[in-house]
Image (tube, protein in one colour):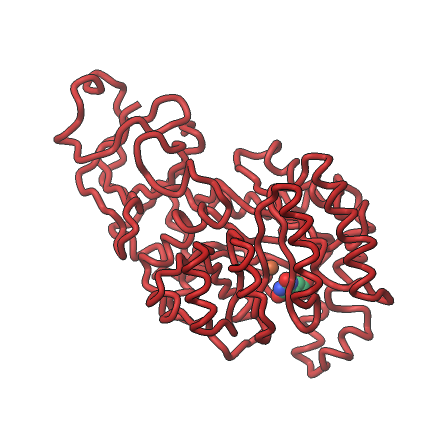
Amino acid sequence: MLISDIKVATMSDDGPGYGLIEDAGLVIEADKIAWVGPISDLPPQYSSLEIRSFDGRLVTPALIDCHTHIVHGGNRATEFEMRLEGASYEEVARAGGGIVSTVTATRDNSEADLLAAALRRADALIAEGVATVEIKSGYGLDRDTELKMLRVARAVGLARPIHVVTSFLGAHAVPSGKDADSYIDNTCIPALRAAHEAGLVDAVDGFCEGIAFDTDQMRRVFEVAKQLGLPLKLHAEQLSHIGGTALAAEFGALSADHVEYATEADAAALAESGTVAVILPGAFYAIRENQAPPIDAFRKHGVPMAVATDWNPGSSPLGSLLLAMNMACTLFRMTPAEALAGTTRNAARALAQSDRGIIAAGMRADLAIWDVHSAAELSYGIGINPLHKRIFGGAL
Ligand code: DI6
Ligand code: FE
């Protein structure tokens, strides 16, 4: 199939722009892109193909949400209300709120109920042109529930036309009444081995924070992940600076996520290790954080930046990747081109998916076709979804 009468934001050069081709053509063969370029350069062997015209619309790589927690039970709207009525964080926690309430709901929900809720969330992302989503465990905090969450995540990818990349996040929170060290050694690490054995783990993540796990505890999880040959990610420097970013860089992690409190030295270390900084403006917004991530330092050192929703029931109930792009620009002064690179090329890199995220011959034909005149409009609109059509693996 030849797609014509389009503009293409290829996102294929590492430069600051969109890699834009005006008056472009794009040839799809099976599930791959066979050719892209100015239509005037169309190689003769493609001139007899069936043509689909898209009336001047913009084509980008399909979007990639590289950090989500869309498998979880329940929601925390009551807690949101309580906080707005003046309840303190502690009062909310004592009333059974906080991450503990999501853990309880996730343990109690059946696999079918968890899947039904996750599919509704996946559908919202698909409707915005997302074709690859990362989904974390981490609301089980016991072996069986962590495995259940990961099975549900895999099931999302079987039930819908979307790729799912799973991350094991057993080191997300210390279960109530447990000691952090013994939880890591006696529950989290054995659960990781079991989940890996069951083929459920694509990457290993953790929450390195004062209220969760320190760098020594995360290092123990990372050592086991490394033995198992699994790539690493880390929630680092979200609420304070305790050294998670340096740990992620030391281990050559795929990504360090949040990174609000990262320093310039951290930026240099991420650049050196080729680790992506995943920017999560939804959490910054929802918890009314004041410290913005050091975007200038990331730029200066050449750290690739991704943008994701962090969709979770607590700190980021954000179900729109386009809105995350807008927030990254408005709250953090990222450019619209950086925001789009953050949900395409750099998001693919944060998930080690080298066959997507840019438009070039040989890449997967996962594409988004938009009713916009310029690529900046994707980040400019607030709560506007200009998706015309999504192409998944060459299928319209
Ligand atoms: N970072 C966060 O902000 C959360 N998890 C994480 O790793 C919060 C998750 C929650 O509140 O449910
Ligand atoms: Fe998260």
